[in-house]
Picture (cartoon, rainbow, N blue to C red):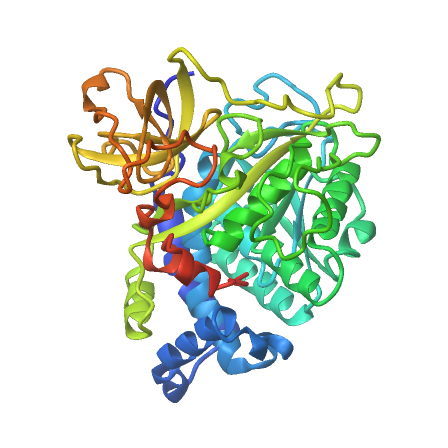
Length: 494
């Protein structure tokens, strides 16, 4: 494996054409008169407030309002596609049930002659995930794929299917995809599916599970049921991909789903309003009988408990996707609505279904982080670059099996990249993160400094640090890692 490995992909000409064509497809499906078009920025702003700071208004679904539906299709849908089409090309999404000559390599899909390729999208809304997969994955687009898009609301499903038909007619009429819709609530849809999917996708669904949990029931219970359904439906090698907004809520929910799937200990209950048990309870892995049934594929660099879930860590796992593929019309609408973006923030989790006979322990080691002598570790970058006093260049935060890491002189690396770094004995006084260095840049590490109150800085993951990593994790306005702002914006954008 060579490093660094970029997480996000440069938009292809087909993706750019598709995002441009989306506006025409939406106009075809839901035309706007001149007055409605002039009022569109206000509608986008109102829907944004409804989905974040004014959530009490969601008692009545926004899909029942033509004004808000139009805003969703013209603002939120294209921005979600910008985000997903940057992420999806680089992920190993598929594993063929059979391996004929020329089978899967580096996540590229291949199907045998009689091999059904089924994708199951839960909480699909206007078919956002299917649209993104069709645009961003040419290896899938050329296969006879069947997509089942499920949602409790029929109206967005119908709109999404019609948008897909319009895009295919304009961009690739020969694509042999079949898009079916299934009207069913999230908990019932898996029981109604016929066939075994190769890929299960969830776009902005976990936050809806939490919202429902607040109205009754356990959030962890809903996540466990989701994993059980996925373990039952997926054949060995099948994949589960969940993508959430890069808010604190989105990062926490994907981390919880991750730890539940892997049987990791719950290590941070401070902000969990759904806590039912003791501090160090172990999650029961999906699949029953204490057996692990999933393997972690991305974004993590290790399979131990998530360092971002450690007590005292106020940052959360998220990455910032570039917004360079956004069409001009979309950026102009965003500015007019006061919702301009320079990048789009996301949190995600990709799991692989394991063989039932795989000999696995139900629990990882109690002390998953290596300590002591310096070791070269795999690290996932999880912040934008920022100035680090006393060090050259700009630094980034990263996640490693030793916990939260701070890597100086790392601005040249792509956002969200997977890289190799060498652990040092030094710890950042502000965040408690372990300072690591990139190969050939060992001189960039600053000297260890005391914390502001004169106390010795604490190693990452050991108690509350003197500062907050989130204060340096600067994202786009929509995903800024600021605790006060993020906790007030529980995003439900599908």
